[in-house]
Image (tube, rainbow, N blue to C red; front, side, top):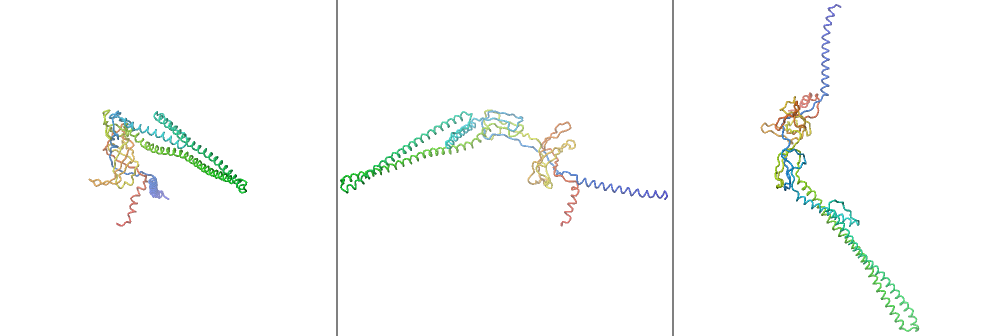
Length: 434
């Protein structure tokens, strides 16, 4: 084979190898791109245009009941925390009402404890108190308990004495009846012995008549003794009933007093929290953290009406509130609590970055712009920070009205799904009739 022929073959093979390498390179690139598109995921993002709005309104602090100003504890420009005392009002009247109700409550509680002990038949147990007035009331109830026990003991002793006397009368009546029965039996026996003797003429008839008369008298005495015994036994029953009635009446009186005291105690218990709250409200406190804008009272000793404004506070809440508009087509991908990225248009995002935030509110219905006819939903976003920072670490001012671009971060989605979306829509609409 000549040199010319080999060179011709070599020239033919080289283009084929080059085209094959190019083909395989394209296949490899397509495969790599396919794998990358399938496994690489991007966040589904909803875009909206918005602006910075005031985070919170001015808070006006007042007092429900009003009263006399005793002390002003704050001044304009002062930073306060929630619960910080601002103004102190006179609490003479409210404190007096509360103390009177508390004293009445403690007295009723001691009375209830004493009555419970009386009904249970045990010594009363009072809660220890360092308050002299309460201790005095407990001493009064303790003394009353002892007096009531002495009264009960006296009544029971008298009833027991009547019972013992009735029982003694029963014994005497039984002895009298037994003697009468013995006398009757003896008189009857004597008459029975004289009767045959009189019939045979041994004894005169007058002796039999006298014996029968004595037997009749003895029988009458037995009847009287039996009636006396019945009366004595009835007296015992009455004495026992009287003894039981004394105990029952005493317990019934204690139970009635207990029920009344329990009702009064419950009423005082319900009234105490409201009175205590009134006393605590005489110290007007900051409802939230912020800066005092104005103090609307300036005279110690002056009078304020119920509900009259006392102090104005500008809330000190962290973060900014962004109000943005979202198209109705995108609202399905927006939810409360969703992450958001806020870009303030006045500052270059590539230099100063943005602020992370969270969706805190979504309008319940769409809104139509009257001028342009545009329909949109309003969403509110609270940012985690309240300012952007420059290269020197200085905060950049951001105020209400500044414009912002908002990106709402949604679920992740692969690049392949993005690429196939037009084809998916086309396949869904391909065979629909118009």
